[in-house]
Image (cartoon, rainbow, N blue to C red):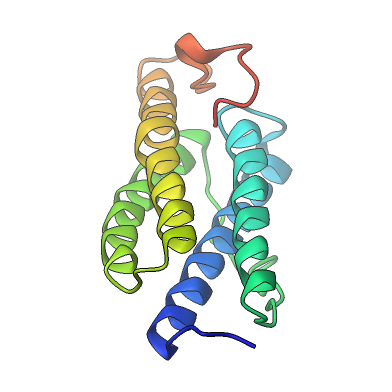
Amino acid sequence: MTDLSETEIHALNEALDDEYRAFATYNQVIADFGEVPPFSNIRAAEGRHIDALFVLFTRYGLTIPENSWPGKVQRYTSLQQACEAGIAAEIANEDMYQRLLRATEHPDILRVFRNLQEASQQRHLPAFQRCAQSSATGGHGRGAGRHRGRKGQA
C-alpha cells in the first residue's frame, strides 16, 4: 500500500497527465508534419518521463491511469505554430513543477520531479525556441541546432 498523502498522489497524477498530454501532442505534430525534430526527439523523451513516473506509481502501489489525450490534443496549422506552442507548454511546465515540488518530501519523487523539470527547461524549451526561430527566419523549423545527432539529449 501507499504511504503517500492525497496531495502527493494528486501531484503524481498531475505530472503523469502532463507527460501524457505532451506525448500525445508531439505524436500528433509528427502525424501532421512528419518525423521532424525537435518533436520526434522530445516525444521519445516524454516516453522516458512517463516510464520514470510509472516506476513511482508502481513503487507506491498506485493504479496507473490510461492516457486519455490521444485524439484530444490541439492541432497546429504550421510547424511554426507547433514550435511556439511547445515554448508556451515548457514555460507552463516550469510553474507546474515548482508547485509539485512543494507537494512532497519523498526523495525519490523529488528526484523524478526535478529531473523532469530540468529536462523541460534545459533541453526541451531551448529546442522549441530554436525551432521557432528557424521557422520564423525561413528555415525548416527543425530545431535540432547544436544537438543534432546527439541521441538521448531530450
